[in-house]
Length: 500
Image (tube, rainbow, N blue to C red; front, top):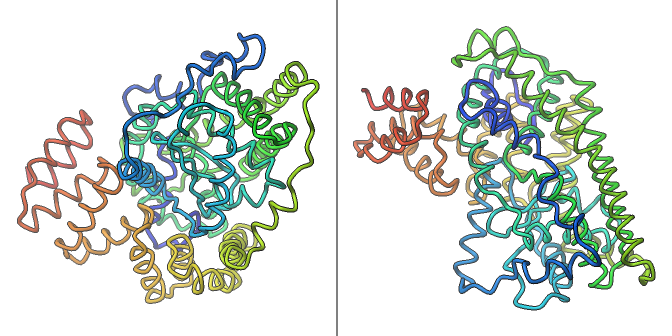
């Protein structure tokens, strides 16, 4: 979630959102991290060096999945990708008919390729921002906000074809994510716990959280280099035309990317991020917090500048490629009416309305700072079809907390956890509550669940060691994980937790 709470609340969410920036100060391998954060260079572009249709040149090298993984094994791998998304404090939307539809479009895009379809599945996230990304095991995540911003099935096909192209071209680079995430998230938690009690006005906190969320996305989710993006665009054109869609939709989709980046750039320019005096006083980090904040926003701004210019260049490249290779192509009518009809189906419409009500509540907090109006809108997002949804429940948790309705906030927090799809933020808050009450068995159970769901995040090790020790359980394997991390600050915290 990206919602503000009262100043006295420890903003664990904000912590996860500044992960990337913290890597840039005081952490090892800084040069490598900066290179990955910037999105790399033009190297690796195949499409600019080929003659004729790109798909014909790379067809023999495409990652057409003919391996022996059975459906159960593949589902487990997709669950790992979902766990990573939840680690980034996102969730999966409960809109089954719409999810089936977008997956059917993906099947149509694969139709012209020989071999079994690559084991890829699309999941819809409830976020209002325009975003889509593909993770290591072939899970493609598209936000509801993106689907609502697209105008027709052709634009949807263009977006999915681009993401699918990254899979077919084997672009995924797992180590990039791990290096950025593991070194950044831990320090962010410490910094933001200090920042949360800064006494800032709600408007400033809310807008800072929005920026921090974008920083987090750059750190946690795929950031391909220019060559890879170019190849994915060109292969997407081939896939779209091959499937019978209008190729002009690829350009329209890229235009939406350009406008989205521009909106973020303007928002950041109008809302500078500063470190509060109290945050500095409360911080336990051995870094300059002003430098940390400047690096966070500065690197995001640089990335957005590159993304903005890149989006314009990519449109030109796609136009040039279409004109050269598909001059006499068919130009079928956009599938607009049938696309919009998918959102007006009774079951889907009810669910989408609840999510969009949550979007309006978030925007109300961002624009008007009207807690009562946000609460009314948020209340419409719970109950009914998606009443027990982690996204909407965490929205109401944050709003009720901001209203100082502690009991109501706790109910929503508990309901978010009970969905079995809650983001890491939910777990962090519950662990904090148990640790403060010295309920170490309950904290240990949650932390062990986090260790499994979120693929062994190192930043939870000090609390996990404390909880296990106070519960009379062995801490040896977790201490060894601390030692093998090579991170001296983490090792120090683990030793303190174990009493050494």
